[in-house]
Structure formats: C-alpha cells, structure tokens
Image (cartoon, rainbow, N blue to C red):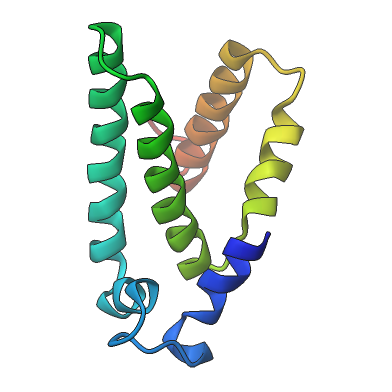
Length: 121
C-alpha cells in the first residue's frame, strides 16, 4: 500500500524531517504522541456514529475512520508492522466465531499466566 510506504519513508531513521512532515513529527515524539491521536480519533469515530444516529451526516463516519486508520498505520510502522500484517490476522480469523476467538485468546492468556506463575493461582 502506497500510504504505508510513505509513512515508512517518514521515519527519522529513513530521512524523515520532523520539521517538514506531520508523520515524522509524530514518530519523533514517540508512542505517546501517536497513541494519543489514536485515542482521540477513536472517540471522534464514536461521536460521528452517534451523531449520524440522530440525523447528522453519516459520511462524517468515513472521514473519522480514515483519520483513525491513518494514525493506526503510523503506530504499525513504529512497531515494525504493515497493513498486510493486519489483513493476514483478519484472514487467519476468517470463519472463526468472534465468541470462539475471544474465548481462545482468554485461554491462551490464562495458560501464559499460569506458566509464568508456576501453575499456582
């Protein structure tokens, strides 16, 4: 995806200039900066959806989700992932009930805690 490549190129390590690029500035400030933006954008998605339920323009949801996805892509790049990694995870989950998938994750987490704690509860 071209946007992911652009974000990657904006990393300071790849020559991104925080004075010339919003992405480079976010990345140079560290995770707190882009994680805060993800939280803000997620809230704005919720607000746009709630507003649409009460007669506001529903297309605002798309605008806000685009902002959320963009800032999420910045986070993915920071942590060394790409949108393709997210798509692969969604493909892996395909055909799995959300309820089953969540239960499996909880079981794996519980097993990890029990293993870490030596089997004691």
